[in-house]
Length: 117
Length: 108
View 1 (cartoon, each protein chain N blue to C red):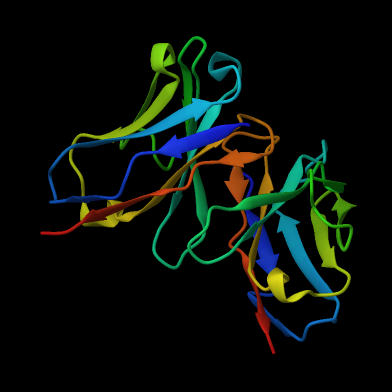
View 2: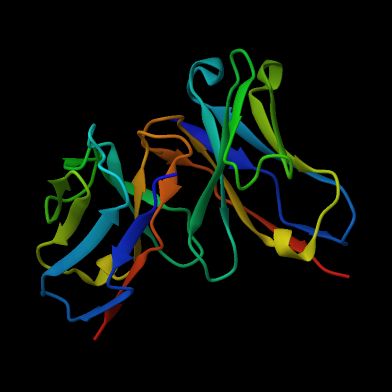
């Protein structure tokens, strides 16, 4: 069974750094892209970018380029999304999902990030 | 970037009625790489339809997708209580991939 299990909810202050994770299992982690999707409170879905864990090839949406970093550690089948300096506007639920330029069939459960002073 | 515009924003219907949701793209999706997702409160989105009209595994046949070029439609033939949710379209043929703003199907 394909599963993507994300790290838990986080509460951070503006300016702090954060790295959230997404662990894949039940399939060959290095053979499928992983996407990150943002959902701000009460809003729609936004595609942030993707990574191919096999070779760490990474693509970003222009809207998120330079604001976040997507990475992966294939040795532990885990993808990451990180920020160096959080803003209140980064408060959202972040989903990982399996897929690059393909439909997103499998999703993580989501990680709620709250940034507040 | 391809912009997807979904309409209406909210659809108020009763169980048993037919729902028709629209997704319009700012450029032609020549490869028909369009998907539909369902999202319920507090849950991750679920893939319903991909390739414009192919149902994902386990999706009931009351859900159907159609369209081409810039105009796409998700139809729910007879609404079941569990179908009241928010629906998003997504194009996955051109980077950056993009989602529509969503249509909420609510109980009338």
